[in-house]
Amino acid sequence: MARVYNFTAGPAALPLPVLERAQAELLDVAGTGMSVMEMSHRSKEFQSILETAESGIRRLLGVTEDYAVLFLQGGASLQFAMVPMNLRRPGRSADYVDTGSWAAKALKEAKTTGPAAVVWSGKDGNYTRIPSAEELKFSADAEYVHICTNETIGGLRWAEIPQTTAPLVADMSSEIMSRTVDIGRFGLIYAGAQKNIGPSGLALVIVRKDLLERAPENVPIFLRYSTHAKEGSLYNTPNTWGVYMVKLICEWMDSIGGVPAMQKINERKAAALYEVIDSSDFWRCPVERESRSIMNVVWRLRSEQLEERFVAEAKKAGMVGLKGHRSVGGIRASIYNAVPMEAVEALASFMRAFEARNG
Ligand SMILES: *Cc1c(COP(=O)(O)O)cnc(C)c1O
Image (tube, rainbow, N blue to C red; front, side, top):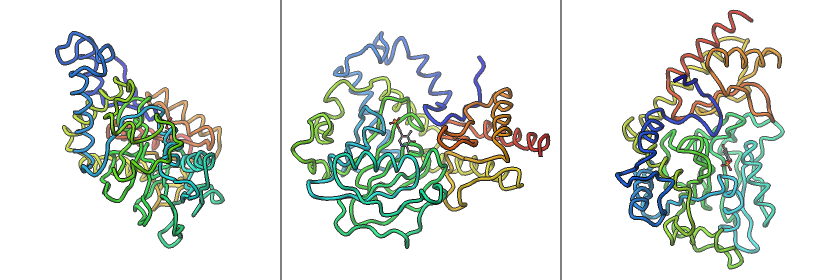
């Protein structure tokens, strides 16, 4: 078996123990004589898997009963549309902070169904920093404030979650469960599963229950959060395999020591890469220090040819997925929860050797 060191941005690396467990249970899960993909989503066995996945999320993230936990489809991208449809009532507007490609995409989708105000944009500065609290002037009557807590493409993140009066809505796709957050600060959190908590085809939504009833009457039944909350994420057939994988990942997270333990490991991993990047002019991280992501580390070399060579040689050395997003170029190492310290250490020493050869 030849497993690579996988730095892909998403779908991304999954913990090896989780894959091995899924493999062992593939033909017969929980003594049912069938795969989780072959069982009714209404069976008591699947019900139990779903409940365990939900309680795992609640336990690991500290989600209280004031919030509903939903497993939906359509990825984080459908949430770009569902959030404004459900939370922005007729004649009202919402605030968006434009910190990068994903925040911008959420904003663009919100504008298709109503007004949305950009309270701050990093676009002119090529998305290299998160605004300070003083720079943020939210609208007095905003229905909610939307942020993307970790910009997967730009490699920047909100170190501090902003204080808002309107409910705070956050796209946490590429950092959910990577660091501790106070869920009580948010009205709604969503995340595509395929970066930190499972396979693609599944989105996690954590929504404060009082917001469930906000949706105007013209919102299609399927697109209302209340529909899925009422039916316990079983309004229609969910991504049963995805829910099962979330359950396994939560159990693996528990075995590591939960989110605080994971955060320590993640900070060490990120520090190992930034240390190499900051050690010489050979590498250049475009993101301001305070805004640097601990999940997606991005950097440039002096030329695109050299970047291409870096990516190609890294691949030969068993490290894949390092090419930056096609929209920005450069190099990006996505070091999600499932990427072990060992992989990051291998990358850091490869970088040092590469610099010695090409510096
Ligand atoms: C990957 C990603 C998305 C898109 O997720 P899909 O599941 O493909 O819709 C949205 N936001 C962020 C921050 C992401 O990293």
